[in-house]
Length: 204
Image (tube, rainbow, N blue to C red; front, side):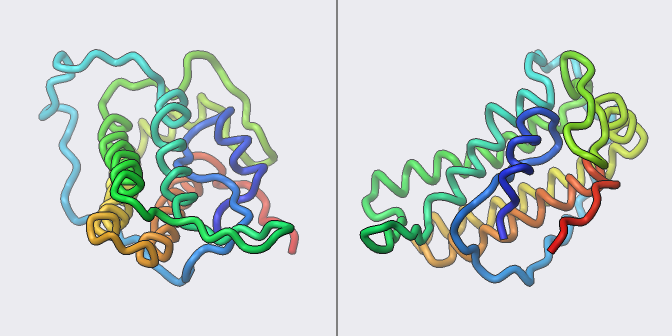
């Protein structure tokens, strides 16, 4: 299932989410796994940081690139209940598919931007936005102490996004819908490690 409205709101205040928000429609099958790719992340020594000109923080990158792209992909195929019936939303024209593909590419390349060394979490200190959430200083410290895991989670989001891109290129709306849960799980894996490892479980 997609994440709650409170999850989406807090994501825009304090980051490391990705790419997730609430959804009033039903997602596809949820029993999926997002295995992290075996490719090892490059070490700091193998990256020439002088090649990059960092502007956005992780928080700003999430808000401007990753989250909107993921939202668009999730919302591109949906069944929406209205007073006058059910709206079946899906790409239909070639222009529709091209627009969905642009957002998939934005998501995929933003995962690379996310892991460029030296990118700060936020411009100023941000407290945790919910009970159990880490503040921005704690998030930055966790990323520094376990950068390999942070990079691997970003690669996991990329792997999930690639499956959505494959569905888009096949013009398969049903597969695009079903594979949205892969992206959701990949985002959640990172959240649970770096953003809200101590958040209480929601009451049922």
